Length: 270
Ligand code: F6R
Image 1 (tube, helix red, strand yellow):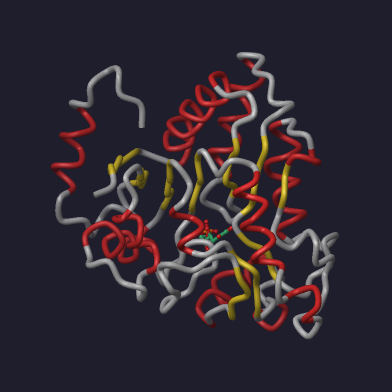
Image 2 (spheres, helix red, strand yellow; image 1 turned 60 degrees about the horizontal axis):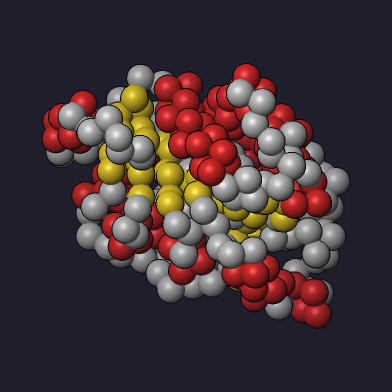
């Protein structure tokens, strides 16, 4: 069972994540951060950037691995996850770009048909994460269909990083980043698998807004099922789910989660 924290807004969620990550980096200057794109983590990155600046934390050795990337977009495309991670994480946090990897980096926009480059990229990415000593803390958003990374419903809960076909729902959700034109959203991606994500030592899932309420309830209180890939978090020994009131609205045990967080021992971090 994950720890569920219900917060007022994205900034409050971001501060909780940022405090935990800042303390991690102070204790382990070469910490490995698992990074996500999308709207949900943006406030968390902003809060972390503020703490790094205010507390003058040395991040020169911090490493990062992103969750996923579209296939077929040039790396320089503003909506490639390579560009997005650099714009929203690497630059504001002041990380060394050489220390941060996105699964599509080696593909350089290669099309899906380029099997020589695309087919083994996932395996290589998982090896690189393992060689770095594994991810210390993985930030996650969740899709309205319960995906994490781009592991769409039906994804193996033991999967490694690999090529996936995006669900039509996900392409429609993400059309907002592509001039609201769903046809511009790529059809395929390379994503860390659920098995890869579960190897991270700490998972922090952020979800905001009514649109995520059903997926959050399935994730936290439903059965573990590949039809809600995020429900695999229930199998992880250290998972934290931070949600606003709207995203928490369909949780049955809200009162318990609030009570438990209010009575959390002061020495216990998330
Ligand atoms: C992004 C990712 C996706 C998003 C999810 C939610 O790297 O892996 O799983 O986290 O689609 O997106 P937002 O936060 O934009 O609602």
